[in-house]
Length: 469
Image 1: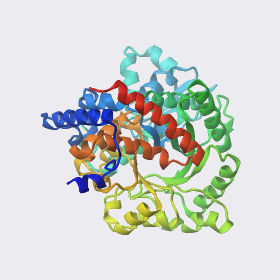
Image 2 (image 1 turned 90 degrees about the vertical axis):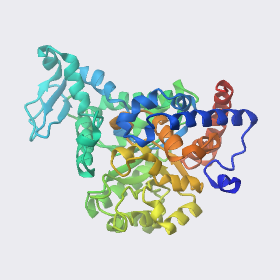
Image 3 (image 1 turned 120 degrees about the vertical axis):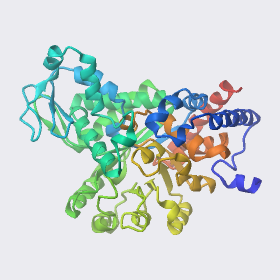
Image 4 (image 1 turned 90 degrees about the horizontal axis):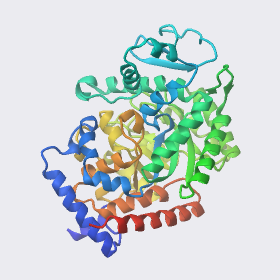
């Protein structure tokens, strides 16, 4: 039993006397949670959230220094309440209502051009002036920006239904987030939310979509990268214990080959121009309905053919369809020397890919809540990352699209990974290794990793001393 325990994530972590005491306390809390009438990781997150918020384990995890968030999409970074209650109250914000029961937003100095399959544009300020119940209006706007619903099993009967709605939320939010002044405020607010949750570094997947000004002028990708760099610098100046942000440039896997070839060329250029902020490249979107990595092999081979370094961070194995082309993305991701694997939900079915990723130190970015909400697994005790954790496979915990799921920061996903996926055998050493992994497997330079680990260790020691039972 001791031998087996030593193989799991955190099993070889040497713990101090104080850490062992806190670990024993956590175990007791976990046993109480498991003995309760409702076990949150076995329930859909939308129903489990209020139970998690009342959990003493969750409260501890919120205070715990979690290191880095390495798999988060830039357009689902900030709580949707802030988007509606702050951003949509700014002047010149227009809204239209689509035929698919959603909304689109646009900031404009004059009435925007009509949008296909959308009602005429209305100035939100005017609409609120004519509305008796502004709270109801705001709540209906919030509902369009999140998947959160009281009865998810009925609202989303299958993966097609939930993905359709999921993609719709990003379309709804894009008109707000891509307005240039909002873009910077939104990113700053996102950093605040993660910093408040004791996260000290982020690697963001970002499409670097075109941003626009009030009078219609647009900015391209380099402007967005500069904005990310400048806002991050400002945030670090105000919060010296924050390590920074790097961007993984993404495009949709629904693009054709020439579209991805253009994107890879642009990614190489941006990586050369902004080496400190641009981490690499990835393909995003629903894997099951998108094109495989093999389909894009000519485009993805370009950097190597040109002798250029462009790190890849591929989403791969975010599927439960074993043996399909999509399922084989895991092997192709490794053949293209991916730096990390996004989700890797199917990795347990691929012994060779599992062995290769371990040998090469290619960590899997596990996003428990995302996998559950998007209907890959219903009970998180059955999440395949449990197999990876029992064998100390390189992995990190992240939150993917927290705002869309009604979560924030990393604590909710850490709770699901620690209590649900890790089960009773996951202990304080597990949490410690997962936090250290997030810096170890980041794209930071060796010097910055050393700085980050030293900074994290001082925060961790403080956390232990302040939370002893």
